[in-house]
Image (cartoon, rainbow, N blue to C red; front, side):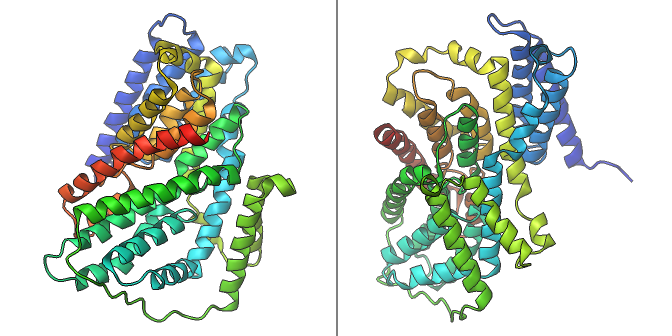
Length: 453
């Protein structure tokens, strides 16, 4: 019996190639870059290759990054050891306050889904949107975006497509508007996650890296910028889909079935969810940091056994480790001087502020079209925050938000893949609508951040 199948063999070949590339890059002599910076550049090269090609889960690369950082940069005789650096500076990001914030969000999301509150919310919104094709599409998108602010956008896409498919199948044969509904859900899920720090990993990565350089953004401050942008982008997506897939019917009947009455446990979880969100939004007034507030649902939900050990094991630890790995790499790049050296390679000072922001936004969206948004954020944010021509807050937030507007291909985001896998779309359908939305959205992200920051 073979110990490794072809998939494992391919992963090991990619790993070996990545390590070889990292070794070559790390051994090159670059003017102005010290030994620690060269080693970190080699680690960055390995991480970039593995995060882009994904021969194994992204969080595995995060652990490999940590191992390489500690072994190559902090062991006795290594470059940073001479500066008195401890390996703990690379381990700490894996339980950074941002990780705790995400953990609390995942816990609340699990309880909300367990009690069916997500379905309850979707019913309430859709029942109020009317039966016109445009209203039904908008209702689906608003529901998807709102749920994605708090829940996994992958889970939200799966839930909403389960609601949407019967509607699509009820349309007359050949009616193209069904494609608008199927596409509207993943597009709205992608956009909705931009509204809150816990909505999507790039947001958390940006907050964590900014916190590491002494520039904090609170939960409320993020939402004050994120929610208006989400509203604008939702309208954009809706208009594009209505234009490309014009409805040929006057009404669509939405059968949502009979809603079960809320029991005591569901009411309790809904109240707890409301309290936690309220505390997240009012950190400046009560003084309790958002990550500490995030521990409340863990204590309450697991303490009262509303959630159990199986739920704990399924809390999305992989996502947490991906975020931790990105922030750890950011620490290495900053401490070794690599960030400063990379920034000096390009004369950003000669570019106007708005054009520079457009370059960041369009570039991040383009890269995310082909690799995960988490990988894009992990690779780009540590670099752009060192560019003095633009404030770290602006550069990090632009990359994080633009990483969520890739709509062109099924591989761009998990919601896109789920929608494409439904069998109701062709690649050309997603490409036609997604290319317009991706380009327009990336421009709007840059313009919006330019005006509000």
